[in-house]
Every structure is written in C-alpha cells, then in structure tokens.
Picture 1 (cartoon, rainbow, N blue to C red):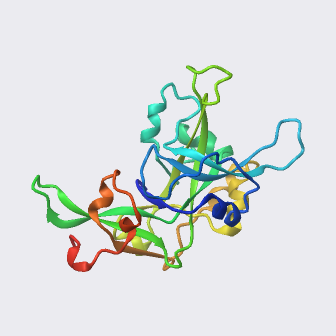
Picture 2: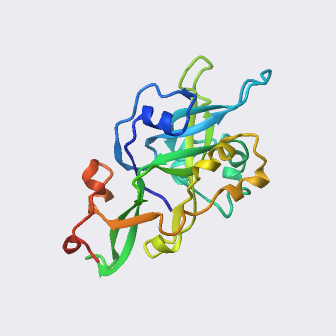
Length: 250
C-alpha cells in the first residue's frame, strides 16, 4: 500500500512540469514531508468542457483530499478507507469503477514511505518496523497514478461553494524487485509520455491498464529514515534524510 508520502514542490513548478493550462489552487499548500490520509494534496487532472463545447479537456492543477469518496457514498467518512486502489481490481470494483473510466489524475510526490518488518520485537511482542523512503534516483518528481471523485454534500445548499468535495486515491501494484523486499505493494507511476492519454477522460477504458507500469528496475532508491515519520504531527525535510546505519532497527 501507499500510506504516507512527501510532497514539497511549489504549485508554479508543478504547473510548468506537468504543462498545466489552468491552476485552480486558491491557497498554496505548505511543503509536506509527511502526507497522510485525509490531508489535502496536489493533483493534476483534465476536466472535460461543457456539454455544448467542442473544446478539448483542460489540464488543471487542483487541491484534493486524499481518501476517495465515491459519488454515491452516503457518508464521506468512507474516504479514510479508500486511500489506495489495487490495479488488479480498479476497473471492476464499484468504489473505483466510475472514476477509473472518466476521472483519472496524477499525484505528484517527492517519494513515498514504507515500513519494513525487522527481526526484532516491541515490548508488546509485535515486529519492529523500520521506515524507508523510496524516491527516484534522479530526485525528480514521482507522478503517481490516481483517481478522483466529486462528492456532493447533501447537507449544503446549492449556493454553498463547499457543497462539492474533491477527493482522490493512489493506485498500487506489486512492488518491483528493488523495493519489494521492503513491502510487497507500491504506487503505480505514469511515465511523462503517457500523461496525456492517462488524464484524457475520453481514453477508452480498455486502453488504460496498458498505460500503467511499475517503475523500471533501478529507477528508484530506498533508504532507512527516522521512525519520527510514524507520527503524523512530525513534519519537515529531516524526515526524508537518510538514517545512519547504526541508528536503524535493522
């Protein structure tokens, strides 16, 4: 799974890198080195034009909440359980099927965290876990494949600007060998030459899964980091600094 990641890029940089036409970011997010479920995150989407327009979809940068709330959900709290969608079932599972067909996004990240079970045990008898940070070796942006939904809050009036809640989820797959020893799942990446087809809401569903591939072997690097990342209240660039070997739980 992907349960924590880091995102420190500025909106202007993301607009340029992802060739965004329209930024819908009203208030820039602070750099976040400990992104957790239910937090607001940046997402690149392509929104279709109005029904009477022949214009192509518009690529936008938006702020979404991590934890997808399906449009049919009665209670938005379901989003806290919808932070990941498995590639193997994303096209058929009711919670994600509609979004996979029409509402796909890219979630920019510096990298993501996973926890490795060590041979040691806690005082309660559970395995001790060492956190690792996994990022591109070139320190570039990780474009994670995601889905988004727009949930209408029935308790808010038609004139309430907060009546629509935009939420997202990260698509995961089996981890490639270089990081599979840490955790058996990893976020799916979308290569730059496939961004357009992945985001385009008119791309036929039967062509979508072929656009998603695990990171190429050797493209990512993984290293142990401080256990402080386990507490969502901790935040700062020190969370992604390599941990000296003598301080790890390995």
